[in-house]
Image 1 (tube, rainbow, N blue to C red):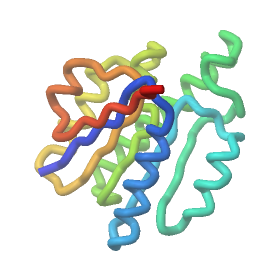
Image 2 (image 1 turned 135 degrees about the vertical axis):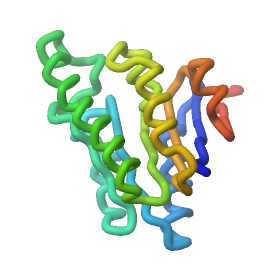
Image 3 (image 1 turned 60 degrees about the vertical axis):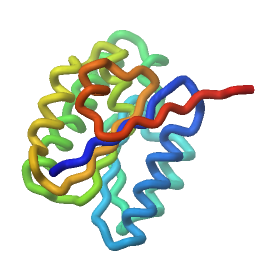
Image 4 (image 1 turned 90 degrees about the vertical axis):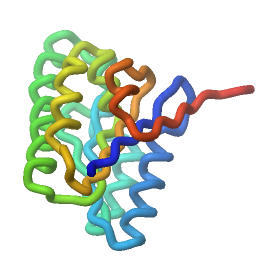
Length: 160
């Protein structure tokens, strides 16, 4: 049965925690794919993470090197098409059982930004069905539907 994990909250470190989980999985011989959303492709983090290949496959379909919320409306329109390509790639990964762990970094932010609906994430989770695939979602805000579907939720927030 597929396992759904969520790392959410207002604190810093959601992506780091997700990547750490991916490294742990890769270290035990699992195939890991990370698809990043909303972060652009020119970040130092992206460049560092890309060095984890081939053990961990990292993909960002965004072609503009800035965060989504920093783009003009015209750039956002173009970037949304790129992001949807990444989302559709995640669907293909699930359908073809291409990996053991699929990390959809900042996928919850796609809902916050109005790029996709919660129902589209739910469709991905349902598509995994009874497979052994582990899906990890990250983002600040956790919709109730995804909370209900998740097997484990970790909330990250700064205390001080």
